[in-house]
Amino acid sequence: MKPTLRKQIKATLARIDADSHAARSRAACERLIALDEFRRAGVVLVYMNIQHEVATAAIALAAWRQGKTVLAPRLTDAVRHMVAVELKSLNDEDLSVGAFGVREPAGNVLRPAEEIDFIVVPGIAFDETGHRLGRGGGYFDCFLADGRLRAFTCGLAFEEQIVPAVPRHDHDVPVQAIVTDRRTIRLSQRAESGREAKQ
Image 1 (cartoon, rainbow, N blue to C red):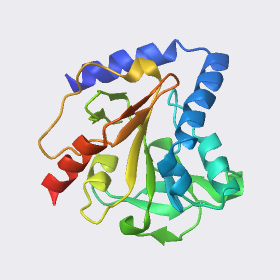
Image 2 (cartoon, one colour; image 1 turned 180 degrees about the vertical axis):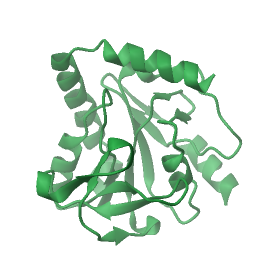
Image 3 (tube, rainbow, N blue to C red; image 1 turned 180 degrees about the horizontal axis):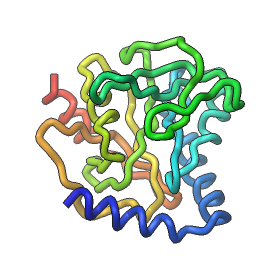
Image 4 (tube, rainbow, N blue to C red; image 1 turned 30 degrees about the vertical axis):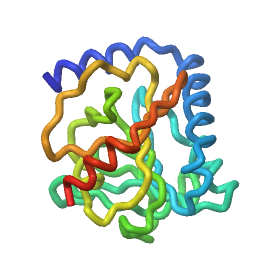
């Protein structure tokens, strides 16, 4: 079921033209940046978008303007292991291409999970309970399940990526909010319950 849903959503996103993708990415990012949780955050983890995902450059730029520390994921050689690395800029010299062709910070300043205040979470699809269908590697799933994590977690997606139900497992941790180009869905209480169950 997961491969079928991934294929369906990817096909839908591929039909969004470049101009619409840019405009709708801006709209989604503006909604996320306006969240109180984002404004209060001092350390923000932002995913580096690939293919047809919502572009996240505007979030990183806004965070820097507000004096925040910006982190981005790095996938390591360990199975499903992801670390948060400080991102200095979006310039080529501060980025490298890591696993699966995903851009990641070129530096080596790692920050522990407990220091992160806000995480922008990618997904192929989300449902309105906060559960997500990821890219398929399980890296973010394992990171979000870290018991030390106290960050506010927010999925970022186009409206077409919101589906009635996402296949899930008992150990999955839902996000606390989802922001699309059209709306903000808050799920804090449900997500907190899921996180407590993990600990």
